[in-house]
Length: 533
Image (cartoon, rainbow, N blue to C red; front, side, top):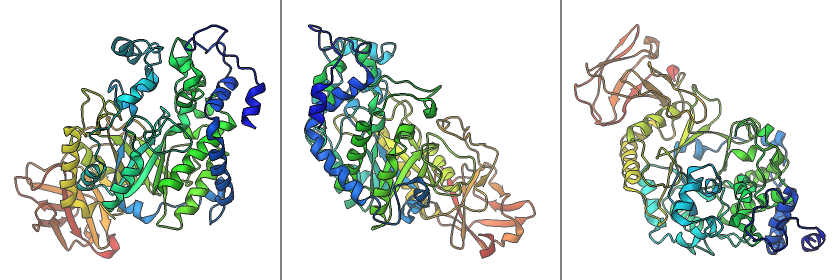
């Protein structure tokens, strides 16, 4: 059917005799660009149709139906609510140039960008050396899935989420729907399969991240000038490369009129279902463009299919950005940001351990262990999880700065983890003078915390007060704890010592030694009356 359709549709791309890399933005319609991509991937059509048939057959087998009203009954599973801390991994072909950001794959084709200029100066014109030419350089020769998984466990993570496919369209797993995969090119390894086995062997939950939705348009810049994106031979990697017609900003998906075909949506559904069936992830993270209006009739099929499967084990999680799903149909994720108060349902923030990029780039700078631990305490006090991203080098080695910080977080959690893992919010999330700046991409705008800043979490019979600094005068008052809370005992988790305390009208006063015990943040285990929790 597909081949017959393509045989009778005229392809208006390169003029007769023109170079296969000549610009096509002015000559190739969005529909023709999509048909060129379909032709390049036609050999995978039978496998794709088989997966789509399975989804259609099984998506309503369970308590969830493939409609938003049903999906709003979803609740995150207990393992995820208890986990609190996860690791995100951005690693792929974009780690080879190690320049700009993980969006190098797009920006090297954006003629006004620094990455475009860097690419020509370093590798030559995009018609001679395109993104595809980085793939043989992505060898992952130092990749050790077992060593990674052991590090993540030492860091105190309870789940790990590698990017299975970024916007660049290169699958880090053994897909049967593409030849452009890490199993068939580059490393010649099923990276996701190896990580899944190693991470689960450490007793951690395993998830995947799919950013394929954006791939519909990600390489559109390459159509505007002489580049390999225009060569139909590489349409399987570069995709339709549809012209992006964005709204007023990236968050304005309702105002985004980029062309998305039904064939593209079907392929997205099949590729995501393939990840579910072959790797059985406990969590799937979607980036923001999954909220584009064209996905609204396809997403419910995938979610019902996944949620109904997950209900047969310990439950599964789907992370989405604000506005991409109706409230409650998944687990809200705030990218590089925080909430200003306790959220009624469980949520997540994801941020990177590095400051400039999610993937590895040279000369990046890194967040301190203290800033990440403070972020973790704040997020957990508000009913959330923190998923912290790392970016390994192209060879599979993890930079020392990232490794050292992960181990420092792990040491803190080994001592203070009872205030984090399995905890629940108190009646207030915290107190103190430092105000968190709420919203997406705001995580660097919150000022450093002080010794007067506390975050609270609870376990049965216990309140944990996490102090963000050590008071120089050796005394501190926790104003949120009232006489009616009936404190019985206070202990400092860092060294196990009992802390002197006095209940006053304006709060609980603690008498502390001059020198801090522990580091980064200081956790007091406070026994209260049951009515105070």
